[in-house]
Image (cartoon, helix red, strand yellow):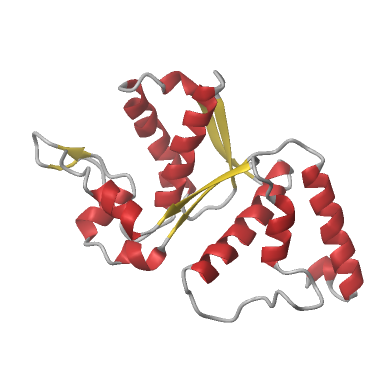
Length: 209
C-alpha cells in the first residue's frame, strides 16, 4: 500500500528490523494504557460520563461538565496523562505531552488538560504537568515510534481479551505485531496499564466519594 506497494517480504522484514534497531538504540520508555471497550459500554451513561472526565459536584449533586460517554478514547487518555505526571514527579521532572494529531477527539482532550491541572493542585503535582499539544507525526518523528508501539499493544490486548475478527498472522512471511512488540519491550522499559472491568469498577466507585 502506498510507497511500500510491491515490496518483497524480505524487504519488509529488513525495514522492520531497522526500525526496531533504531528504537532499541535509544533509552525510550513506553507508557501506555488499554481499555476494554466492551466493558466500558456495559456501564450506564452516567458512569461512562464520569469515566471520560465529567466532573461531579457533590453539593450540587450533578455533573459540571459533560464527559464523552460515547467515546472510550478518553479513559486511556486520562490514564496515560495521570501516570506520565506521576512518573515525572518521581524523577523531579515536568511532563510535556505531545499527542498524535487527529481532529475527532483533540478538542475535548485539550479542554480536559486545565481540568486535570486543577485536580493536580489538590495533590501538589500541578507543577509536574507542562505543555500539552497535538502535532503531526511528520513533524514530531518520535510519534511514529509511539504509533508503532500503540498499534502493536492494541493488537496484543485485542487477542488477549478475546476480541474476534481477522487478524495479522504471526507465522506469516512478514513479522506480525506481537513479534515486533516482543523485540521492542524489555524488562524495564515499559509500563502498560490494563483497564478492564475490575479497574473500571474501582474508578466508578469514586463517583460520589
